[in-house]
Length: 150
Length: 150
Length: 150
Image (cartoon, rainbow over all chains, first blue to last red; front, side):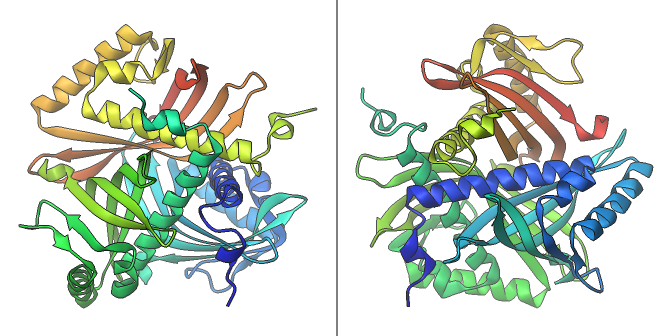
């Protein structure tokens, strides 16, 4: 069987370009999320993007719903003076033949209390399907599993 | 003296390709480890690969031994409902003239109790010698030091 | 308006080369810092480099002052048997037209007590202006904000 590795293996310049792009994408994506920039963050999903976590009965679907859920969380955190930081790491990128990307990575969430202390909040595994819209990466589907709920 | 930097400096496309490849390698390497995939994980070492940690009297040597040690740890963790996640970061890659790679990086280990909480487990420094076997990166020698035992 | 993205977008080989270079730079920069190598670490700043943190009345400025501050911290930590590890992650790199780089990233600090345990120490946001001196990246200006003091 021909795999994506045959097309463009991890030792190729093409893979390096995609890999750097994914890392930059995640950085900006989480800078927006953690800053509470709901609309700009929702724009980093495709129009029909989904976010699936075990603590929700059904996946969040589409930019309007994504922004609404995020605004609510941001407001709740602001009210109690808590700052969250999302980290993606151990990022494995597997391009599909159509140019979209399957990504499997680890995710950490840290929380800090203003005037208090910082702590590890969550340890998760994240599986993303990233697509291009007008050349830019967007999350089409995200599935997150928390290790403490595994 | 001519250093590896002269051959292919960190601003070159060749270095970027190698750097992305190392990051992808570590991601897949630890996804296998943390999933308990002993044989597949051992395959990411060279045949004679070694793993040296201060808590062992002698380095673990060769794939069969590596897989056996890992299987035992995975079984012990499963029995107590603990999930571990290994993170490499702050990765410095120094190619040798023969194309193999010296890597120095930091390593974190997180632990989560199913139905419980997540915590930082270890903070370490890892020094790897990575070689190519049939074009694919493999760990030939790994030395890990724990900061709390330093 | 033409932005830096038009010049060299995150999907280009040029961006990948810069992105890998920045990651390698941070790795070596923090390996030096955490090893207490004051002079070598200060060399990773430009001659007039500045380091601005909210816990200082004024930014630290220039290599001599940077090295002095770092030596003092390293001595204090050594006296109490504490090891620190600095991690940069979620790195967003934005090249300026002049080739210098604006970087926004997250920063973690871990602390370990020799013979004791390891813990998360700080969660921060770091904004760097990186310039080239004789082709090598240097920190010209760094601003760090701690989430717990936000």
